[in-house]
Length: 178
Image 1: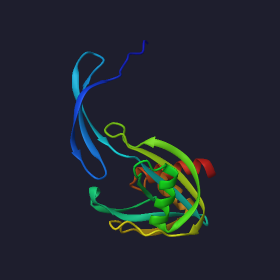
Image 2: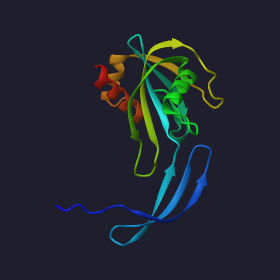
Image 3: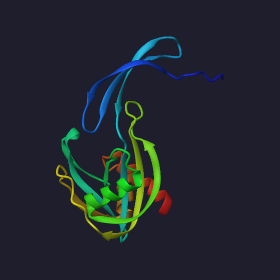
């Protein structure tokens, strides 16, 4: 079967919304079949997430997520600042959210939802944790919880976490460390 060019060419666009964390754009694009359509894209600066292991336990954070109107349990994570290297962001976020810093190992970089956003998430594994807290952000109210690693893996495999980065992070790390 012959491969078709499915590249879409941007003809023009506009910014519909610009906030402190994201920007929403609507672009007009030219399709490979000659038609024109629009694409709405959420532009995001990127983020990090950290699977943090201490004494055969994983550190998780429970926090209220406004978009889903509930508290959920997830791995520590946070948004990249402008020009901030992902490793620096991971170190900062882990210290802010859990109070710990550790040896960081890059595990994966992936798009979170490429159907509508360009957000990239950088996943790290943190080990050899030592207490070295930073002051949390003013708008973060986080409870740190520890659960045994084997239990976290089981919860990820049985769909007991409701956060995709947490599920994927735990399962990717399991593939590395067993």
